[in-house]
Length: 320
Image (cartoon, rainbow, N blue to C red; front, side, top):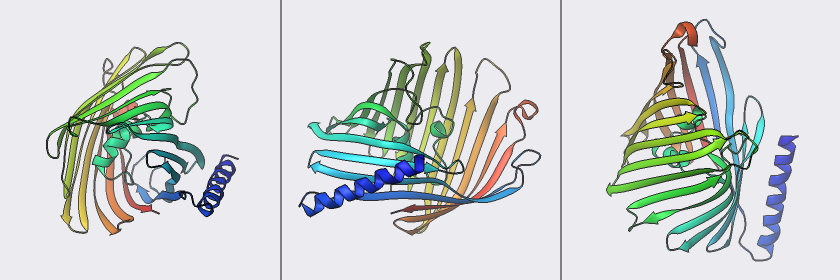
């Protein structure tokens, strides 16, 4: 039923845009992304050990239209296997230059950190960011936000007031989360980042706080980032970090690597883990990328947490 509703939604959007275009109005732009994988799981002794599979882990369909030079509408549907679920990833109206260089959004909007980190990581089709894959932060949520640049583009900021549960989960209380990212670029390409989210989860209003501090450096041929995460859920303190980078070995070939580490309860011993990703990626065209990578997840205590995991995957990322 969700898939049917989604297809009807997209169909109505397309029909409406065609009708408006015929009246001389700005047409709706349809775009999307497809991520496809073939993986072989090398993990021994636990399911899904020694399993290989083709899959389409993500499919995005977006429709956007400019109502004027300063007002834009956008909606994005996200589909995922193997559950074959469908979500409204984005559905918002954006007002540009409300003040010079400052933009306001309302609806199902992107949250301040994950989308920004993905642009530095550059390989979302290979793996989600650390904070996304572990569910530390939602990439989108219902709310309102303002973002922009200050001090001659020295400062890049994004501030949201959101439900806090994320776009896949309904709000369950009147509590709202406040999330803000500030990035400062003192030297061209080099940036310092700070993120803070303060909120309360559930009807009981328990703590849901996150803080991130990090640095990054970007040029056309390479990019790198390192950051530290401090997290609090109810009375449980958690922490982690992510370090990653990529480098263009040739005009058509890049190397990538990443190290994530996470401790799900800093007061409890033997419950942390590390994820290592390394591989290569090539651009078939501006809209098609292929990557081959090896990922391993090592646990601090395999007796309690289970066997270390490893996987070889070929990834395909397509924009249309």
